[in-house]
Length: 341
Image (cartoon, rainbow, N blue to C red; front, side, top):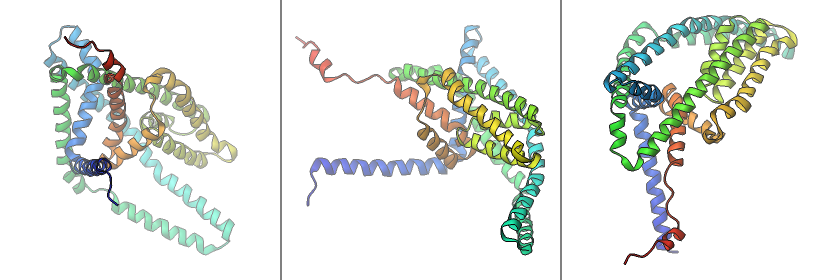
């Protein structure tokens, strides 16, 4: 049976598009070391655009404004690392204690279910082997030294992309006159979304810190900071923190009270996700949850943590850019166009 020429042409087009898509994704994955910091630099520059416009209104030259923005982003990053460093180290220090608690839970549960003393020995032996495997998997000083040049190269790529895009953004957009308005609207959407979500996540972190302090769970500032950071990774981040609080509750408390930390965080997160974020972000930037989830997963698979960070801003940017594209004239408008003499 011979296919219709139009059907065959469409099938060929679809096949070519699929092959091109696979080729592009493969190239993006292979060029992770270059494309990931470049994309992160562009996203951060777009987020910092309102500050650039403010400096421009104050009459500060654009080169100076770009330098100020770069210094500000670097200082903010250093402050974030310095502030989160002790929290992360404290969290790492809690891991052995949580592992011991989980070990005894499993042993007690196995005893109750099976009543076999050999289960304890097997579990302890298995956990000891896992511990040795974890120690072997931990990066050594030599590994860190070998990774340092790659990190320095990516940092330089990010810095250069951020500075030069911030410096020449107006010229770049002016050279694309037909899309300049849509590009600027997309940039504004990303800036508005990111800054608003950052403020919301900060409020959630403060709420988690206060709640955990009232409940009496140790290191409440750690849980507040974790809630602030993980809430940027939609769906996956809150689930991770919910599980962690569940484990922490069972290690610190007994009975039904052990469920309180996870339950309190669940209520706070649900309030933020269902009422606060939709009200402040606005319906025009609401995205399909499935698309958001798949975009984050794809970003994590493609570029690792950087991909998870930039996937949502990119999705917001593409959505806003598409929404501001001029609609093609309809057939009715074409028919009503006056004929030329």
